[in-house]
Image (cartoon, rainbow, N blue to C red; front, side, top):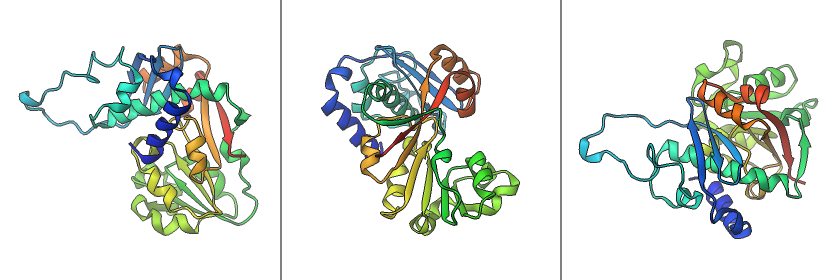
Length: 269
């Protein structure tokens, strides 16, 4: 896991131990694009799915132990974070579980929350700034590209951008060239799942406004706030049964906000 996530889990263990010691995984649904989880306290969380590259497995390497099919539900969440197993799906599940745990903490905490808001609505786009988006947020790109701001889009796959936006594309590995010169950086929550967020945040200057947003970014904000993040674009699930349906039926972030979740912004103030 990324350093940010390790520190977030440690923060929860230290400050909310009584909430998680007996907490177990009640249901999990791995979809092609999203993963959803329900915990034994009734909380729900989601994350972008990061699948593993599958290879035919030798018989001697077949795994039927913990956190394999039929051996996920019922496990304590502490075991999930303490297992030495490494895979994209385990990392995905960890983020979904962190988001589920965080949902109750955020709802009962003293955080500054703006309801029914998207982070893009809280950013000043009227002045001429340099803005870097990490991830192919085509709706954000469309909105920012119509302003006088200079725009870069860091992305692993150039084809994730629609044709008219490909002129803003910068290969993701070149983040060290564009992030330090940016006034605003908007980061996809998928970087929490694929453990690239640490390097991105390390490259950000002290005066840059930083946003982390997306289906994976609904975790308790304390550690992100300590690491230069100003705004977290999170979600609050209000129809959990539909959440699992959407995940099963190839749903993505905008489907969540159409059918079962609302946008919230958590501010570092």
